[in-house]
Image (cartoon, rainbow, N blue to C red; front, side):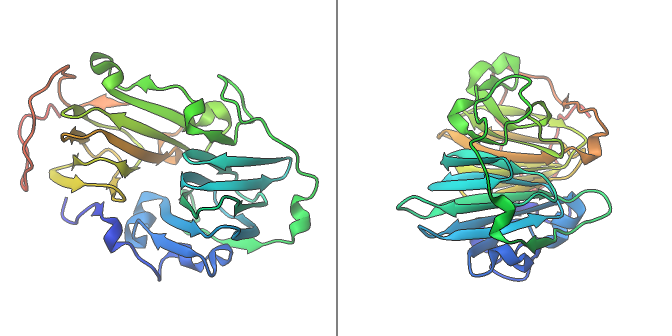
Length: 295
């Protein structure tokens, strides 16, 4: 890779990207976590929004599907036919063109990661403010996880079971699929991952581009021939079909991940590019090409 795909939170944009142009975020604390130059190629717009207690995101609709991941605080969310109160950590989905709103209802600020799938002909997100009457008559939705349940749009993270990512590593490398096609989310898949200390996540690749956002812990994240030291708040972008993997350090790693389904054309495959070890050798941090990949 010629340009860095590691975007520390300390370098996040406070102005000038697509998120700041959306009228529903006017006056709110907004950080662009993925530069527009990368997001346009990735078909992903990604950032962070902070709400003060009582602060409201006005009723609006977006041109693209939106995923919200609540990192801190408590919010109430509204959409036609449903409202839900969600405390961190948790996730919600808003389909394209659908009216929705949210408000920080706790005594502490709410911090949210917002991601939009921007595949197809429209590469930027546009939005339209709507009257509050667009959400009149809302009722409580189903937020309980259930296999094959197609009406789950808001879910607390701990309501979703952990599943192993690599069988040889068991629950030392695990993830939660919070929103996906099986729950009615057609444009993307989002989830969280937890990796034990001193563990290697096998180098692999897949069709959709992906983002990793570190919530807790530190790790070395490999993308192509590059290796990035990432910590809390950092975002790493993985282009489509790029080899990537992870080495954790001496602390537990917890991450949020997001990928769009536009590039999959209805199918998805995880392709390992090295043996799926149970206790692999550690990889040093390198600045040049690494050896031993089975590409």
